[in-house]
Amino acid sequence: EGNTELPMVVWLRGDEPYVEDFCLDAEAAMDALGIKRSRLTQISGRELRVGRLRIGRYTRPVYRTEDIETYKSWTRATATHQRSSSAIKEAATKLEEHSELLADKLGAMVATHTNEINQSIGKLNEQTEHNYLEYLKQTKNLTEDLKLRFFEHTQKNYEELRLRIDALTMAIDGLKPQTHALENLSNHILKLHSSVTSMNLNQKDFQQQVCSFNQAVEKNEDSQLNLNRDIGKALSLVIQFLREQASKQDQIMSSLTPAVGKPVVNRTKPRRQRRRLRPRL
Image (cartoon, rainbow, N blue to C red; front, side, top):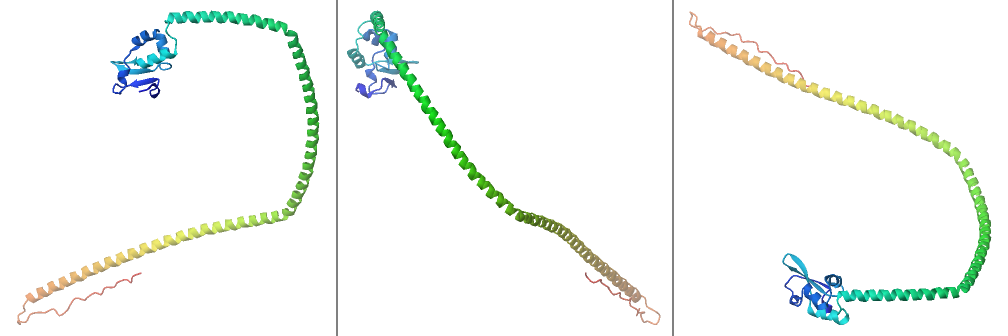
């Protein structure tokens, strides 16, 4: 693939179709470019495309031959790193010498044009002072004008405010009788509310008393019904007992035979008692 289709740092898994192109390790790349490891580390991923491939336990940099050739074609890094350092020192020395020469020329130029510079500074100061005085004058006039306008506006607002206050005072005085009437009405309403509240409380007490009375009446009716039921059961038992006694007496009399040959019959029957039930309440 072309150089423009890959990023400057290519992370490789090992199954890419272009992984075989990254066949140079760091040592081979340094030998091909004639640089040291520090320089190679500096330009890898910035000026020179580098691949990152896991080899064993570590991820190591790998390079393509075409990327090495491309880098060599647009750079002049054919010298060793030591020669590059010497060239940099030589350039720094020349730059220092040239800077000293420029400083000397600048000093001479400043000495030559000092008078012109001083005159220009003097004119600039005079112009600045004149502008400052004009600014103070305009500011003073503007301040006086603003004070006058502020005073007039304040006086006008004060008159309008005083008229409104007088109108409000008259309106308040006219509302005082209505206020007293409303206060009296409010007091009367409060008294009525208190009366209604007390009536409600009394009504609640009366309702509770009525409920208690109804409950007592219901309990009394239940007790009366239970008493009537018990009395009826007792009378039934008494009647049954009397009938059994009469039957036994008849059997005893029939078993006795007198000399005439006629049985003695007890003509008297036990008097039957009437049940008297209390009326239900």
